[in-house]
Length: 272
Image 1 (tube, one colour):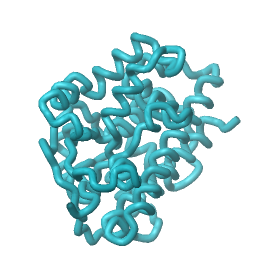
Image 2 (image 1 turned 60 degrees about the vertical axis):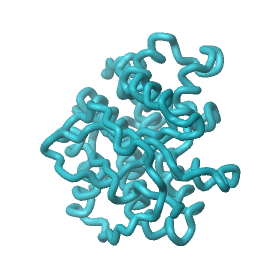
Image 3 (image 1 turned 90 degrees about the vertical axis):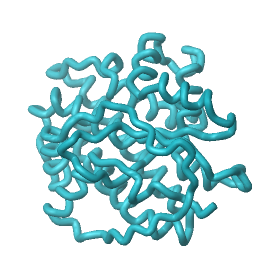
């Protein structure tokens, strides 16, 4: 069993690696969309699995008292992780995976996209890593025997992610228009929630864990759900962002990027 410090270290490395996938994505999307989608999907899964490892370590530590499944940010992230782990609700598909699967060939590349309003001090955000509202809604409507989500937890997650707003938006659209919402702010909020409790028990084991621990202690919460596009068409991004060497300054930059989200880096997928 990993200690809380080891689990947080794995989480920090997963965040750094996933952010580097996001930084490489605009170029790779033009060359090999399927590989890019797999990289981002595996990066997201690694973050979710590492977060679950923190949960496993913390629940066995008598020093920690935390309501994981009654606290909206952590309840939501654990539910998404478990759905992917148990292959429920299409594994909660990412936007990139949704549009690069063979079954989507010939389908319109339009979609609806929601994110969570950045704090005023954040300024221009950097990335989006969106997941399917259709799949998430299906998860929340699964029988308890399959999902193991209580009615209370379902209601908490639905309210927290802005389910009512997304469902209302979906009801006004063509039934085939897929809707996605940004997972990165949800990751930040969940990390902030656990760091507020586990922080005193985390010994940083790497530059990554030191950087992300400090970031989650000082970054702001993401709260307001906002639509970015009513009907957004997919095309390739032209970002020229490069990968810097893994230095302390670079990791601080990466940590900041994890907390931001927008439509400039990985907002587009394929040319229509």
